[in-house]
Amino acid sequence: MEPLSVWAPGRTRVEALVDGERLPFRPVTAADIAAARSGRDGAALASGPGWWILDTPLPAGTRYRISLDGSMGLPDPRTRRQPEGVMGPSEIVDLDAFEFSPFLGIDPLGKVFYELHIGTLTPEGTFDAAAQKFGYLRELGVDIVEVMPICPVPGTRNWGYDGVDIYAVTENYGGPAGFARFVEAAHRAGLAVCLDVVYNHFGPDGNFLAEFGPYTTDRYSSVWGPGVNVDGPDSGPVRRYFIDNMLQWARDYRVDIFRLDAVHAIRDRSSKHILADLSDAAAAFAAETGRHIALVAESDLNDVRMLRPTKAGGYGMDMQWADDIHHALHAYVTGEHFAYYGDFALPGALEKAMRRVFVHDGNFSTFRKRNWGSPVPDTLDSRRFLVYTENHDQVGNRALGDRRSHTLSAERALVADALMLLSPFTPLLFMGQEWNASAPFQFFTDHTPELGERVDAGRIAEFRDWDWGEHAGQIPPPQALSTFTRSHLDWAELEETSHARYLEATRELLRLRREHPDFSSPNREDSEIVRLGEAGYYRRGASFVVFHVGEVSPLPGETTANKQDETQAETQGEETATVAAHPTRVQLPPEASRLHTLLTWGSVSVAESCVDFSGPGFAVLSPYRLNNPCTPGKA
Image (cartoon, rainbow, N blue to C red; front, side, top):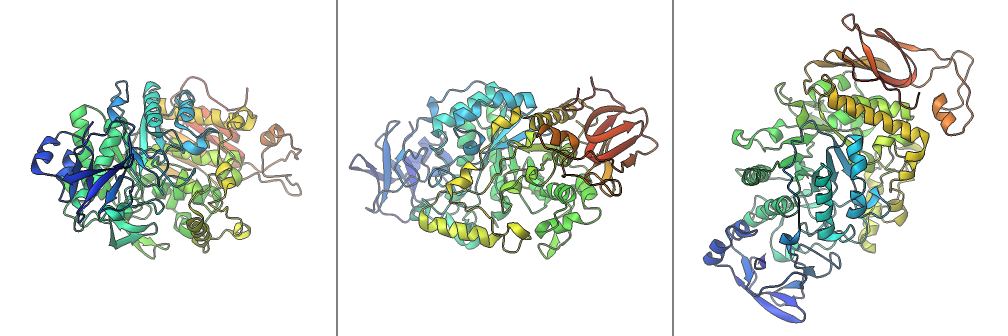
């Protein structure tokens, strides 16, 4: 076990409180730095003055607190475990005790990500229970499990972005050993693990970092509080705090990929941005170990500098989330035009997003009231952009946390998924999306009562200017236990015909993406969307996804009983009128000939290069045949 060390500049006395004893730290010397150079904390000790070291060895399992200048004890800023929660003592963890099988990782470009929240994925809400789903995910066609933040949080439930003690693993899910088992099980199943980490702010509840040193600054701030101090006085050890955190997960838990949350909220005017430092550290670790380590940025800056190599003055991220593509697809399929969706409902927005990635590429954003973004070069690999029609933000940050299953028919919802999954970008599914899960994903917390009241009030204020109509007064309170329990997936839905049919279609779309030469290609220049009102086609090379998002259009004088199609109503035991409908015909261009039907969904019929719709749905057509065509739910 390496000696315990702590950064506490400006303090005159630092002690570890262990079983009623006060064990003194001493200031770090040059000899200590030299001795620790190859250890976990070697680079940290050399990052700036103010470090203290404990000569008394503490075995694994020892619980302790850090006392500063004789004060009551606080959790260690680099604590590896908080067995009694964020307010309790820290515990020494033997990180070398975890056992892992050899796994070198995978290149994530073009692979299928699956984002999940451990606490709501299963009834148990633990790492071990989540690992039981790995066989299902592999069969579905998933390559990478992306785990929302796992650091300790106040109370028993949280998304994870309010976390503190970022080196530790929450006991709510199974603690450090539980996460190690989770990663090992994923690797044995052939899945890479992506961990969501938060380096743009610290949670407010149980956060004692300010007692130790200037981890934050009042020069910058965001909606989450003070900015992190990565470019001011004494910022060297703070930068190292984040770099070493990433390396801990990669080295000691074998994490393969990192999603860096909201990097646009990290303000850094240093000569080298902290993101570039993280990128270079990851690359050095990968070169040293022979493993594949990748960084994925969540950024709303629409700035390709994010993906430019560090040697070329960029930040060196391997991939980034592409919100513009989500917004354009969402606005088209749902018809929602409020708040930031307004610009994405404009003519040409969807076409531009699917071809150029950024809708805002230097033009005016009405939501931001200024010009925004920069163009994506044609030479930039499309697979470096993650695309999605649902994720924790785009579902959970809606006022009601409602999925598309709450407002759209299954036929209509899967149209957006088909366009996303068969695009040249890298796709991400949000847990349960693959079967059109009915459970919402709402914003939930378990703060202290005083802070909880402010969180509840802030949630309502956040959506005051959004056009939620009759739902404006129905925003679920984050502190309510029911908000958390309501967000749990109901796996029994897989036994229902409608959900099983949706799952089968998703699985087939992923197979097409994996095996078909046009749909596995990253070439977005040989792709185009042509819209004809509520219908159109998405050409990928010589293949087509022909789609229609409009609901059934009845003949004059006839009505429908509801928005669901005949098949959906039949499976749910409801009575509905059978409606003769005006079909919508999509005529493909003359060069589209000798096409095979690979997959159909919804009310669709195909005759050569003509596709007729009497409701929402799609057809995948290609000159290349892949085994048998698939119509989910039909013999």
